[in-house]
Length: 377
Image (cartoon, rainbow, N blue to C red; front, side, top):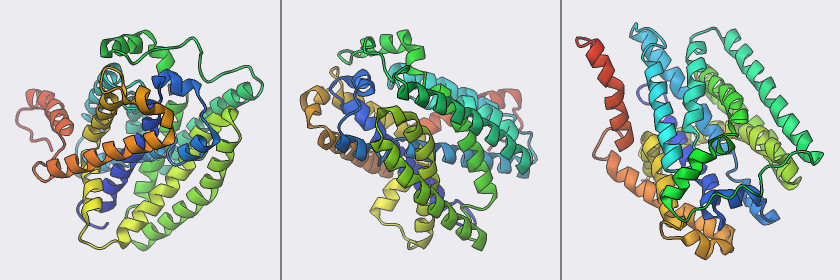
């Protein structure tokens, strides 16, 4: 983890992408589609299986975005370039990509939220540790207030997680696109939690990177041990408790306990990668390839799952969705295998994933026009 490219970084990204699919698979494989999933708490067995993925890998992905932002800031400072500068153009491109992904592919896209969070965090990442901690604490208090209010409302029976009259279907792709536009604010309501939580996790990722969480040093190993012990030791029991407590504790389960587990995963996976042999096996190569092409794989997994499960595709959700967790797990395994194989094949031939390559061209284009003599890297 010392010089050059940080090996654990790509593995962590790959695990986060595949883990996020583990949660999204429940949405795709429900016979009632996204609306059915939102209205159905599932059995106790299903709830326990969802513990494996619900929120924690999305939290890990958010932390990784923060680490990536810190790396880009460090690179800009080292090269003597103005910050945030052109990074804000990256945020604008991510926002556009997220909106297209939401409208055309998946209702529960996170890229829009990440784009919005990245702007204020870009201005904070170069400030002192004290300033970053202050903003993280403020965002955390706001986040916990929202979670507390929703939980109290659910316990008192004055709030609900879904509207029974809210029934967008999956029969046709144009119909889904229309529903995503018509019910935009309903599908984006999660932003109330994701935006402040994302701010906390982005800043936490930047601070952890600065503290050496991915270094091969003694301080890095100590920090990883602490992350693993506290994140898993506190987060997993809390996660199990809030899952079994019932739907009223949904917000605490997804937006409080799951992010705690995400920090444990960060420490544990990074420590595991450090102990692995230098030459990776096929699984590690595949996960690394997914991590290096994370944006492409995030979009691809949602496209593949849509084609497999929705009625305008193969319609497997309506046919096999009654199998519950078995069908969900099978879908996750199939799509994950395609991603691992496809990403490995692609990254052996190219430096970037297909979406990353297009994104890089769009990112560089205005820079070349405005500063034709400058070489941007």
